[in-house]
Length: 190
Ligand code: F6R
Ligand code: ZN
Image (cartoon, rainbow, N blue to C red; front, side):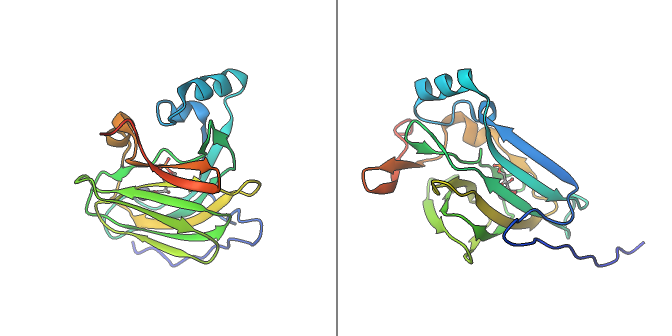
């Protein structure tokens, strides 16, 4: 049977979609090993397993030809001097891409390929970011008070490979420097 077209709204400035099929909440513990300052991470975790980011998903069949859509919300904050961020991933079907449209807040999309190419693109309201096939991606919120909110869409068959990134982390990190957000090399990668 053929699916019928459907619509939903993302009311601004609230940005919570009118249709939600799944709500993912990731807390600090889910990001273990990713922040550079481990003592700061452990101290923070002892105090509270804080909510770092959330995803509202619109479910569709996870097959080629479909598009998976949703809203990603990274809350403001830092671990040590590193801004809150998503875990980040390659798509399991690596030749799949993704579109992000920023609705609210400021931040960066940190990206890299398996071959070691890197790209860190600023995100701000109204900006459309295209993540081409093969690029791992992680969103980072650099707003001090506001959430970083993005709408995303990607192929239904993409899947997520978190393991590759979990091993060493991304090659680039976004930290709070003397003059504001700075992009630095990840010292854990030579
Ligand atoms: C899907 C995608 C986004 C992220 C979301 C949370 O392919 O890139 O929907 O899933 O921003 O980030 P992760 O999945 O890295 O925890
Ligand atoms: Zn993705």
